[in-house]
Image 1 (cartoon, rainbow, N blue to C red):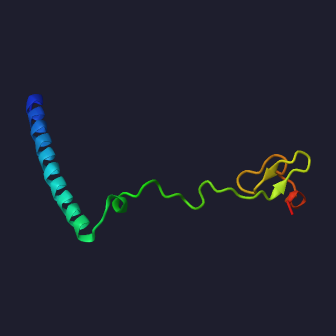
Image 2 (image 1 turned 90 degrees about the horizontal axis):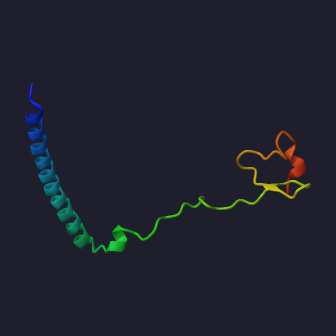
Image 3 (image 1 turned 90 degrees about the vertical axis):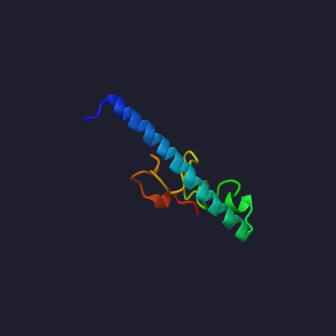
Length: 96
């Protein structure tokens, strides 16, 4: 069995090998990327578009389908039903 000091020395050696391999592979990847950019005439905005693409449904509002005649509160029909409409016939609360 190897001693603690031997294992630490092996670890340092492996860390150095890992760093060298990463640097070499990164240089190859960058060379490939630069070649593709030059070949297709890409610009930074083609590769890294500004901002995030918004989901078509995220943040959109839905028109309410039901209204409580007593308080005027509304509900879209999505999610958990509010107490004023729970376990009741929803037809009487429909907004027409």
